Image (cartoon, rainbow, N blue to C red):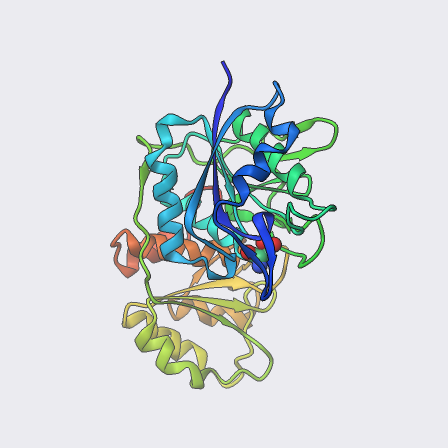
Length: 338
Ligand code: ASP
């Protein structure tokens, strides 16, 4: 029996056409294009059906409301299909993959995000290979989690980052090995596929537009200028620090702000600006004050995963101490256990 895969088109370059304002997705365009691809009607291809989201978006416009809609679209069809391929713009694909990895609780089927750098309507499009291989991965079933396939690599969704604006190998997961590499064959890494086991039936968590912020530390940053948003407005902050969690704070202005923020219920998670490696608070004196003031280490989580996780945990209705405790734990393979 052929496996059945649902292809969910959310927008993004893969299905875009050239308009007077530049490339944009067009409703109803992708179906005939996919039906005309001979590989997709090959006897070796799984059975597939296309569902278009409404509206179709450039992924720079995809955020919490769309993550909720995509999650719902998958969850409503969960029993009808063996797996899902989500066609998505590359710009925020890593955020969406991370968000779905949290909101689709106890997922036991593959959800593979993919897209392309060049649209299918162009001769050199990388879309056919990305789509066809994603379909096979979704039908295979070994990667029964939210993952991202692009340019020969299958990555854990909540470990992925977009690293190139124009290369075909646009994504990597610097702190986690690829779940599979493709060449002539698709080679899965069984050890990398391990992650926390589901602890109940599949469920969908409704994500909400919680006030979250990302603050990137830079030489000369005047933390006091950020006091109002850090201590009054935001419920969660990802602080992107230097190296292993270090901050320029000779004047000592940040720890009192973090303390004040924590007292008013804001969870501050420390991530690193470095592409590889993670945060080790206390390794240097320059970071010790962060923990003492109430910040939590994001370990080797990407900023994308930390942002999505904050949205998820606050949307669950958890209070700040619980959110802080869970940010430090590995929920879906998004961080390496301490
Ligand atoms: N701007 C596009 C998007 O993210 C880029 C892409 O798909 O590659 O929707």
